[in-house]
Length: 288
Image (cartoon, rainbow, N blue to C red):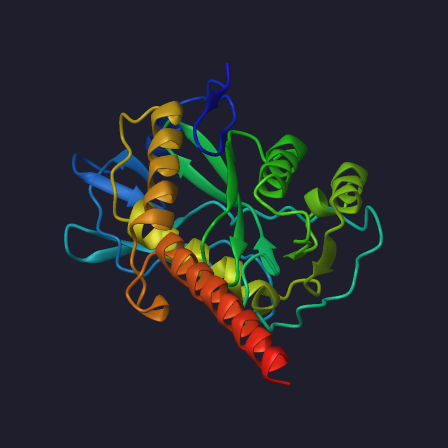
């Protein structure tokens, strides 16, 4: 079954309950311990900040958490690795056209994309968004339970439908397998989009996407208890947040407007600016 909202939520498969597995490893009496969104029975207090980025060398190490038990002893708890889609050199990489320059004065000129993982007791959920560097909005996204080709290709097809005939953005990604499979490359060529890729293991090359994921997880995911929440319910809540992010969440960098409000205001300004320029040109010709 597939549920469709304004963007795409792929069908959720049943997932094993991983809470008993955690309980078997960490035997702690009675309170709640939350590790990267996974809540298990036990007594514990997380005392190390979340680390969701690669280290300075671009590696993806296990992140150790120190858990305070009964106020004194400290035991390390290891969370799952950050999701990484890199899978050798399937096809040749393309140059980094953006070269960390995410500034643009027009919408639909520079897009970035990536995949992030959410781990809850009921299972894992993956989000694949397009982020527009113009306003930080997300013109398209897909949510599913598998980080496969369907997830990213559906997102790309939906994004292409939002564009006018003259709009052909650069789409920047990391070097993950999803962006090097023949089907993705074929779609990019079909739509006339330009591919751009980060250097290997260079997170700052896709900083716009990483920043978006950071805000998303801080506001929506971290410090929340997802115990008892089904995968399907989580996917709907994530979809609702993304709708709110685009239409209601106001940003200082956008003059206190949401991405949609900012885009509409800029679009109206460009329309009247072009109309005024055409009128002045007409007056100049008439005087001459």
